[in-house]
Structure formats: structure tokens, C-alpha cells
Image (cartoon, rainbow, N blue to C red; front, side, top):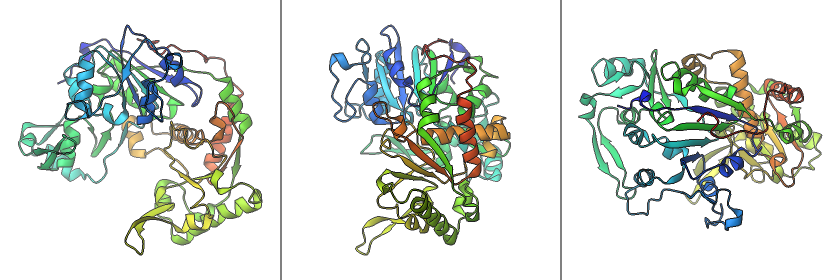
Length: 463
């Protein structure tokens, strides 16, 4: 079992505007006297962390490297080991600096249990939500079958659901010939066992929660630095504060980064507009899932009419994005020839944007692929999960609004205003009055900076 109190540890959150250069400054600040583990959402960003060209993968010339004195590499399945995780552990044992994706980092519980992260400084860029409800697990399965029959126990400190030897004995595995990974092929609730054995299941009341990154991994390094924006609206900050009650090293030190250029772009280059579609029903996720075809079509017609009447169709589809539930934009099917194909929904068909326009998920962040777009229809009323808020002890309108605004800004900041060399004005049309009010109130507040922020930061300020 991992002993949280065995190592000195500090947790820092660098809270700065998206596109303000946090990642660039982080990479420039790496020093050769420490061992680094850099975690990012995308493989292409790993190449950047390794001072390689994101398109070709080739190493950059010495004069273009951000950290010429620090060699950073990626784990590779083709290095004589059976998978990337095994190669990552080899690199860490050898004292190497490594860049990996969130998915690989989340699977390092065994390495953390063996104290392999103890001397490593971990930096996580653009962290995703660390926790969500594990749906489809009833209170009966949880309390009577698993816990009631001694297949699992609840850790009294971390609230993790841990398998017992009785559950371990029921599991059968085999090695996948292609990936080399061990796969569960039989057992009692194998999907839950896989998550529980990796420390990813937490129990609260009769609900079961899934964490992306187990606490052993988050707190297993020499230091933990997380770079994000508007952390007050994130599950992560609340999760770390909850962990800090038992493990003081998890208590986050938040460094707010000020950016005059970000404020200028947010207030001068982003125009927010409102499109009234109250007759289409709720725009929350569940509300969109329940939309009738008639309501979907009405929403699509509203978008089409807005483009024609407000913009006089001067804005080409190729510069326009739509944010909504994916199931309301497209669905999978088969063509007459039996080939797999994506088809438009009643909504996307009516927008006349299905072919030329761009669908963007409301959870989109940390990508530059949409910076050619100048117009967006934001058809979502974002809300934090009430059950998760209860678990984290932050159920309130204030947190719900902070969460919605943080997610919204991350998505909106994928457009053309984020470009460094030639930013363009963008227009965001909100179909939710609540989201419109939150966004415009935030824009107004930016010019009322209280002066308690900084435009510089040390990545390891708390380390």
C-alpha cells in the first residue's frame, strides 16, 4: 500500500488564461538538476514537450529548443518492452525526463505504490475533470454483492473501493497479442474490478465515483504542478482540497497569472450575442438528449435564420462552429452500399452547416486546430453534476456558475482570437440566456482587475 506521509510533497496550481503562454514558460524553465514528468492531453503536444516538430516528429534545431539543456523523451512501445507503461517505468528508473499523455499518467498507480515517482517533479498541463459518477452501478450491487460479501472493502481514509483477495481469486487474465497488455477475460464484475484494482473507484453514500487519476498517483511525486485556467470552477481544485484533509501535501497553492493581452482579446475581440430558442426545451445535456426531432429541427432553423438575417450569410460555413451534444449533431449509420457513414440529425441538417461547418464538443480544450474559425453557436447550458458536487462538498449556485463559465471559456478560446501572430475578431452566439449572462458578466469584470495577480510565475514556486 502506498504511504502518503512518507515523502515531502507540495502541490501548486498555476491558474492563468488560456493562450497566455503558460506552457511555453513552463518548458523554458526546466532545469537539468531535477527529474521531470510532463503530462499533457495530446500526443502532438508530447512532441512539443520533447523539443520536436509537432508535424514531423523530428528534433528541433538547437537554437529553436525551449529547454536545450534538458532532454525529454516519450515512452515507445517499439523499444523491446511489451507496452508504453513498461517503457515509461524503465525511463523513470533510469532517471529520464519523460512527456506522456493524461491517459498514461492515470495508469501509474503500481509505479506510485513502488515509490518510483518519489523524486520526480510532475507537471500536468490542461488537466481534465478528475472525477465522475460511475453510472449503471446500483446500491444493491455495491453494498450487498461487493462489500456485503467481502469482495471489496472501503479505505477509511481515501474512500477508495479496494478488491480483497476473494475478488482477486476470481479474476482471469490473458495477454493481448497486439498490445502486450493483460486483459480481463473472466471474473466477477470485471469492469469494476479493473477500475478498483487501479485505485480509480471511490464510494460516497450509495454512489460510486470514478477518478481519472488515483490519489496515489497525484501525490506520489516530489512535487505536483498543475497548469489550468479558472481553477475555482474545476472539480480538481475541490478534489485536492478534500484530499488535503487527510494528506496536507495535497493542499493546493494557487498562483493567479495576469495577462493584459488576454484581457484585451477577451474584451475587444470577442463579441457575445444571444439567440432566443427557449421553445426548444432545456439546453443542458439531459435536456438535449430528450429533445424531440421537432425541437431539434426548430433549433437548426433558428441557427440558419440567425446566420441569414443577422449576418446576411456573409460568414462562410467553413468559419462557423456549433457547440452542442454530439448526438444532436450526428449519428453513425451505413450507406446504401453497406459502408459506415456519419449522418446529420434533424438539427444539423436544418442548420445547413453539417458539411461545411465544424462541430466542437463542449469539453474541447488545449487545441489549436479550430483557430481558423471566427463564429460559433454555443448551444449548451452547462452545469456541474449535482452528485459530484455533493461528493466534493461544493454544491452551490456559485460553484455551478463557476464550473459552467470555466468550461465555456476553454471552448470559446479555441477560435481565431487566440492566435498569437494574427488574431481575428470572433462572434459567439449563445442559445442559453444563462450562459450569455455569465460570459458577458465575466468580460465586464476583466477590466476591474483587483491588482492581486502576477504576470510572472515560478513553475515550482511551492516545491
